[in-house]
Amino acid sequence: MAESIRLEVVTPEKSVVSESVQIVMAPGSMGEFGVLSGHTPFLTTLKTGSLKYKDESGRERFVFVSSGFAEALPDRVTVLAESAERRKDIDLQRAQSAVERAEKRLQSGDRDVDYIRAKAALLRAISRIQLAQTR
Amino acid sequence: MPTLKEVQLKIQGVKKTKQITKAMNMVATSRLRGAQGAMDGFRPYAEKFTEVLGSLAEKAGDEASPLLIPKEDVKKIHVVLCTSDRGLCGGFNINLTDRTKKYLKNHPTAGAAFSFTCFGKKGRDWCRKNNQKIVDAHLGVVGSKFGFNVASTAGKKLVDGFLDGQYDEVYIVYSEFVSMAKQLPVLQKLLPIPPIEKDETEDGGSAEYQAEHICEPSPEELLGDLLPRNVYVQIYRGLLETSTSEHAARMTAMDNATKACNDMIDSLTLAYNKARQASITADLMDIVGGAEALKG
Image (tube, rainbow over all chains, first blue to last red; front, side, top):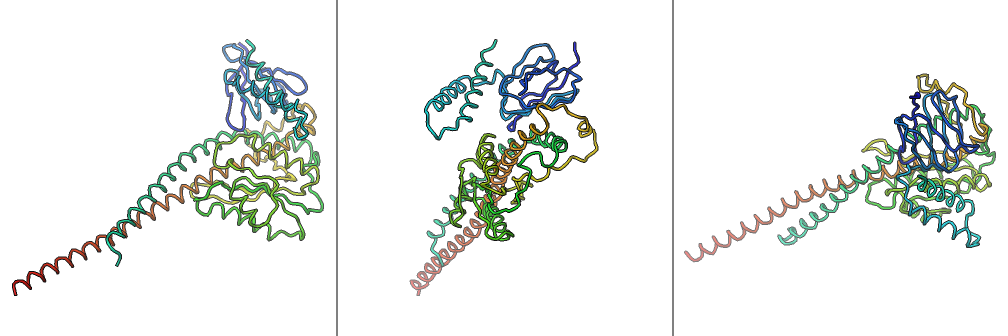
């Protein structure tokens, strides 16, 4: 078994993941990257998307992250995200209604609509749904 | 001397009041626990965030972002005022508004224009009464459960306003939760972001930070991304602290009220017993007097 590395995913509300893992794959803003134990110190912002890791028994696990950044050190990876949840905690219904809401807002042609925000909300909801449906 | 009936009614009234204050005390206690939980949940994020920001700021220099550069002529000042929505929490809100008033009064630049973002109804009402300009008011946030998005939405507006030149300086007034018995009103600068304190402790934790990070994108860009978030983090913390303080203040206030009710009930019961005794004595005197007269 490969040497393990500590993964911490924290949001302002709570700590989502805190465990020893084998490998972490994270959606960096300049491209996806993987971290194994002994990684060079590395700091990057993250895209909205899914973070993948293998836990100590080798099972793949997924975590949704948005608006965050990650810091990799030789023995641990810390992800700070404004929102994050494990795949099993994703509320599919809520995400689906969020998609509808955001699409309606984008299509309304209303001047008051904050397009950037609506788009970001749409992106978040879609990646949540995608993640929840991957098997 | 009040009649027996009157005193009895009064005792009943005070007892009812005591029930209410006691219930409010218990509600505040349980809410306080929730608020403290939220604060505990936030701490790891805040600590890590400050750590990373500190090491980045060191690398990127002091003028890497427009958010760091103080404006020369400070004329437009914005204050984020966090108060509670509801009263019955002692001097809690008064302390916060007094702190704000003091700041406005002692401000060195003459002719500065102030504007406000209010969290909480009490602060909003205070601003209205004092004819202050309210840009934004958020009710139903402080004292209940709220997410980080509340802080980031409000914070984004402030950052944009600062960059547009709408505000020259932005402050936040909130109540720091020191302990159950002590809540301090605090005024803190949000924008321009004050020089970030560099971590100078030399224990193991910070030693790693001497190591050079590879940054993606560049440290300057990363900092540009993190600094606005720093404002949101500060606002979120302010709101959490204020919520916790509000519940603690209400708990103390309601505890005192319950005690006052007890004292009042005691003294009223004494008065009631005295009055009852007096009437018994008077009745006895009548009977004895009447019996004497019959005998005579």
